[in-house]
Image 1: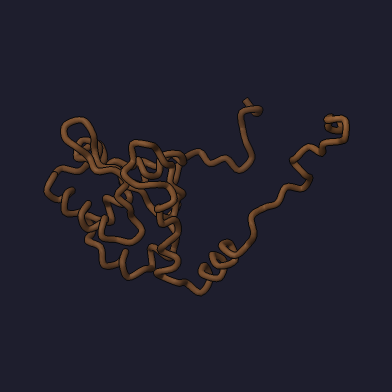
Image 2: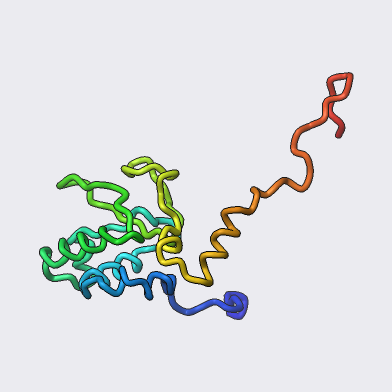
Length: 164
């Protein structure tokens, strides 16, 4: 039994949300139903499905939603926020809308209506501009791409062989 224990392992799952979003005027101006929808969508996140978070009424009924009208209003309000992106337009009866949050990287899939390069990853940092996170983001963007520690191309010698 002791071999299954991993140091630092939590006995529950959780989702993280940046403080910059929580403290932003945009988040604080949201209706309570839109905030709840955001939390319910974050509960769907597995670490590999940002961009495929489903706000359909059938999916949200499992989270306790009773009114489809309230859900539609909450979804409209949430989609007006800068930290939420509509990644796929649903077409009844077989496909549903998909949503992504910009504080997680997009897990792109070919059935999405957006391209991965057009995804506004971490855009809320630029909009909110916290004194702590903005310099860190600028440093991240200005750092050069990692160079390999050793050459990856083989050197060709006169005989047409590469050194082994």
